[in-house]
Length: 154
Ligand code: SME
Image 1 (cartoon, rainbow, N blue to C red):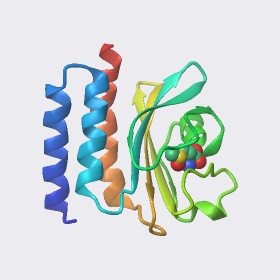
Image 2: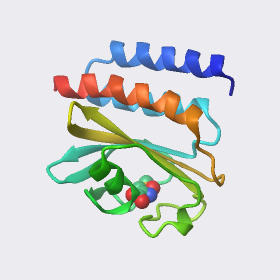
Image 3: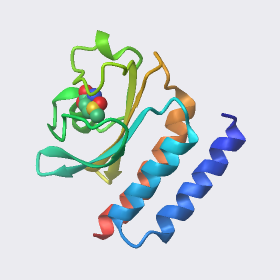
């Protein structure tokens, strides 16, 4: 995927999020657009913060056993605790990893932040090792910021 492709995808996601009737729909559409556009995004989901737990919202890919993840648990919980994007090149080499699918090799988790508060996260798994890099952060961090605006409305 070229930088131009990525910019066009971001534009499409921005439009869909703006046109969505509510935050739930905005999340569902962002997940769909990301999953459809990028072949190595094998599982795409959004977790929403509920108290001290992350609750699985819209997702595409195999069903995950991890529908509620406490902050501090797993890579998802670590990203919420650190309030920072985490990229893991080899999930099976990371002791924090909570397995969702045996095919998964690498993962990126991008917190959805409103000021100092974590509202949720974008979580993406790939069946390719070390699939995620700076281009994925450059795509996903603005998507997280757009979702934060819609989620804060509800
Ligand atoms: N791998 C995540 C759990 C979520 S599943 O990948 C969908 C983690 O370690 O927190």
